Amino acid sequence: MLVVGYNTQYSKGRDGRLDLDRIIDAVRDADIIALQEIERNWRRTGDTDQPAEVAKRLPMHHWAYGPYFDVDASLVAADGRVTNRRRQFGTMTLSRWPILSSRLHVLPKFRTVTVFSMIAGCLETVIAAPGGALRVYNVHLNDVMPEERLAQIARLFEILWSAPREGGAWSGRDPSWQTDAPPPMPEDAIVIGDFNTLPGSPEYEALVGPMDRDFGYGRVDVGHRLVDAWVANGHGEREGITFPGDAPGGKDMPCRIDYAFLTLDLASRLKRCWIDNDARGSDHQPVWIELAS
Image (cartoon, rainbow, N blue to C red):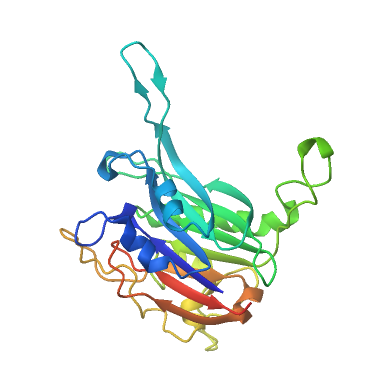
């Protein structure tokens, strides 16, 4: 099973060119695709419906879109007739197997005054994967301040651990709702996306746990934290670059801020984790994992 996460920067490459086909070419071989920064009705992308365009290019995949940013973009004609439109920005998850259910979770946001800060979120999907139902959380955390990311991570963990206790999208049976057996809400989960978080930072430690500096155990994988697939596959925490920081006018240093995390029991199925350094469709690089079925 191949899974990829990719912050698309709404298909704007480091060369400044918009080209959705470059995004698709980079991810089309994956079984599960988690895209961030997919938008609808923005002038900078020609008011296109990017979820529809992505879906058209990947017709063998099921998909769900989670627009955590959603504001009015309606058009009003001279006679007062309204063409209802929404300007949206969010995450999109695609799967070769049916997406049994999805939920959009909006994460905490801190109000700023002079610095632009957008609402953030994660898209939860339950996928009917061959090895059993699997949760996938497609995540995009804000880049403005660590305190905000820590609050978002805390909320993410609340969602992650409460979902199996709550059950699937419905419980029980009622023929009038045209439902069959309740869908599963499995324990195992992939948490993948752009976390705007550096290895070793307080946010990273909130996700994977603190480093044991007294007895030399390093970071101990525990059930109430997540496993960084990159590190579990033998790479150093500070190795790898998912954000080259070399876009025109960019002032950022190359770093790893995009991750694929696994719940503890799922980590035993990890076979590979790698970064696609050749993709040119965004200012980020795709992060891939391969799981045993």
